[in-house]
Image (cartoon, helix red, strand yellow):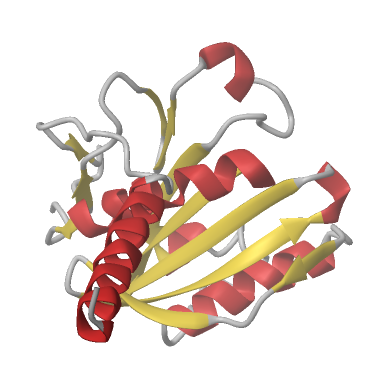
Amino acid sequence: MGMQRRVAIVAVALVLLGLVLGACGPRALELEPTPYRDQGGAYTVHYPRGWMYEELPGQVTFYEDEEAVRQTPPTVPVVIIASGTFVEMAPALSQEPSTGPENARDMVQAWLDLFASQEIPYDAGGIKDLTVGQEQAAYVEVAVRAFGDQTQRLVCVHLGDRGVWIAGIGESEAWSRFIPTFDAMLASMTFLEPQQ
């Protein structure tokens, strides 16, 4: 067998191996075809097929297993989305109502400052930029030491005088498998004009 043929066979084998290994990684769960529409009319989002959600004023929690989500901290991934004006959300972020964050990075930092003010031990990566539903956003990965092996991804979307806060939470191993689904949920989001 000639040298060129051997090189070609090895190259094809490496490509096939790469495809097989790539196929073994975590994949996004299938999302519901009809999106959830925020009760305040701020956004829509597709969530994993078969999952449930619980609405509270200004907030929704998506989860697969009702029993597991009731545990503190949750043992399986959950996604919590809150939305509102910065005046409405200021008490939750321990801020004065007149001083809302100026951008998505400031929103993330306010969240981290809240953890610190409540003396919740955590480790956070750097704040990173991304786009969600054609809007500028920022996020941070957080390991909350107080809750054992829990990882959170906090995503904030700044929409003028209001914001959307998205938190994905779960045990580290389960969370790493869920990241493609969380990213698919983010990619499915659309932001709407506030209802009057």
